[in-house]
Image (tube, rainbow, N blue to C red; front, top):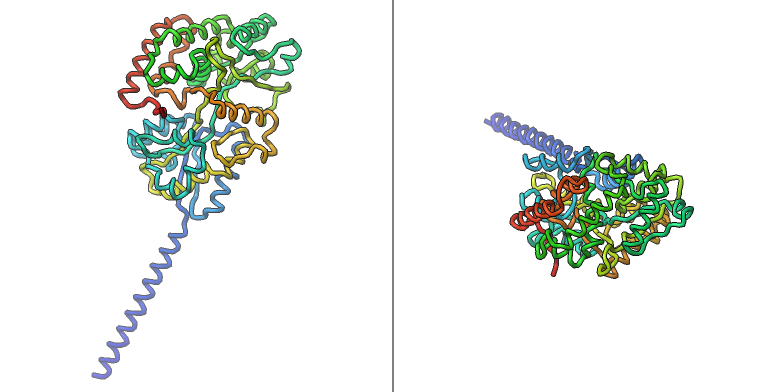
Length: 443
């Protein structure tokens, strides 16, 4: 009996030891699995230069992973990330961090339940105090935060300063001087403006943004965007007709903007075949990495009517949110906080990208350069003096915006009457209102 008890006792001890060993092994395995980094992803177009690619891989992704060894970031590039991302989201997939073109896309994604509300993370990371109010507010839809603001952008006239000085040309102060300048350049045997859209038809919204803000004026144009004034309004019609007439004079790519690419247009400018190039502030990155053989300067488009003041069309280049399908929302929020954070914003400033982060100081940037510093000051002055307009990719209704840039070529070529073009735009604007896709302006 004693031996039986002893064997039973030893057996219990053995079972206990084996059990503890098994638990220990399970715990070890669990700990090892817990140490494996979580992978999160985001998608963009490929970087436009080796320098920009290196900056993203090292200064954004590499630095984040170093400080957050429990997270791996997968940067996915695609030539058409907006379309691919929409397809993935519609089928229940997509990257963890969602980068959107602007407020209209954010509103669409929110209403389709593609995005996670960010209010909880805003409190955790103090986002409401980090950004300029106007930019932060754009990330709200139906009273909740769904996106953080990326760089703010505008549209400027870049010009060949050497060529201007050689010919005695001056930046214009009004529409009469602007058209006189175009005529002088044209008579000199050069294109006034280079512009191309074959590879990116959406670029038509750049000229449309400039034209409507310069001709209609921001105050009245805001009412158009709210559907308080119809797109068929006489002043709006006058803006399109003036643009069409200017284009048909050959002042923009010799009436070939629909037949050449954006790269072709830049080549015309760099080769001094055109004296001016209208594009966004993002062009500073191009000038810093691929400097032309001449000095570049810029001016703001002057007003096209006497009762309109000079203004700077403003937009956010991007809004960043979190995919509702993501299994790693906490990690995605941590990356989002870094991606649109103070340190990255200051570094982006060196590359000519301006994030609306309150702590950014251009005086601390050694690489921004005189041209970039001047552009930054121009935009800040426009904010302070309330001289900002409304660029398409942030403030226009999604359906009307798309119709405008998709169909303007027909107007410029004389195939579509202006009246018909604007009547169809008004139909799309009414659809925007029905689908709750008009921008929510603060009254």
